[in-house]
Length: 373
Ligand code: SF4
Ligand code: SF4
Image (cartoon, rainbow, N blue to C red; front, top):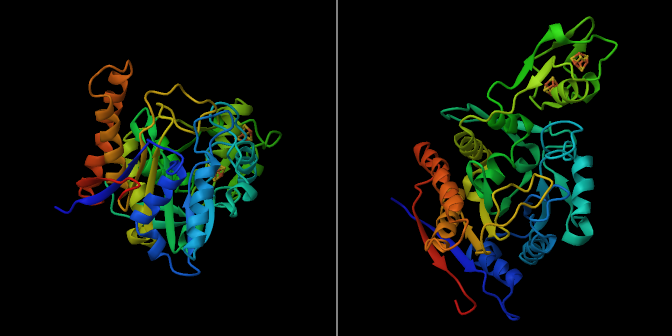
């Protein structure tokens, strides 16, 4: 079986070799400085955090990547996708449209001026701009890949490595939730998708769901009807109907089942869209908690920062990160050891499913790098 290299630069820094220097070093080890061809469009896919979350990736890391991509001859841009729901606030809301998300990004210090490149929302204003990529998955048969991905020569997936209740939340989650359109996010989070209960509709005097539908597939007269052949499962209407109007005629139930497996299958679709060879993965294992950056608070940290991991394979970069997280606590002296151990063990569902569907061998060689290497 073929092993993939995972480069690792630890968190030990000094004035001649700080974390931004280390990020550039990982970029070089991935051969990006030589493989970017003049004029190539390079997406830097990251997550700019929900406002109030203080654990998200600082803009200085993204700025560093923008600068080294540009020095290599590439044309960098920074991208993320819109999130689910509509007009929701705490704890997950505020990134429903490109405008909503950009306002939050600015509050978190992300602007074209700070990162040095345009910031775009890869699936458009409403999160409805995508192309379906067919896959032969166990749970999914197609993946809605944001249109912007198809115009990229290279994609650098810069992920904040931490945990989520289903295990590690890093490269795979940044791809399989973060780099799919809303339909793909709903597929992960809601087994039934949009449910319709016309008898509960308040009729055309309400009609509040109509104007939030990006594809205008809702009609309301005495009751609601939806052209499901056009519906993109964004859940905007259910946020309004169940969340604001409290009618419950349109509902999306957030009860993820086989979430890890579906995230892996979404990742497969994104890789397939323009080819796995165009993707590069960098994990920043810093500010490690058990909550994502899509919540409005910075959860307490579980352990010290580890450093930076880089690989061409999204599965092994996460596996190496998770294994290192566990090994750093292996003496059991950290009071969070049991929690970290539990979350690392849960992460194996991602890795096993990735092997099963042929996404990765799961084998890696960890290559520690330093300023003498
Ligand atoms: S928001 Fe709900 S209650 Fe109001 S029109 Fe739409 S489906 Fe009916
Ligand atoms: S009907 Fe479908 S596309 Fe329209 S808002 Fe509801 S979930 Fe989104």
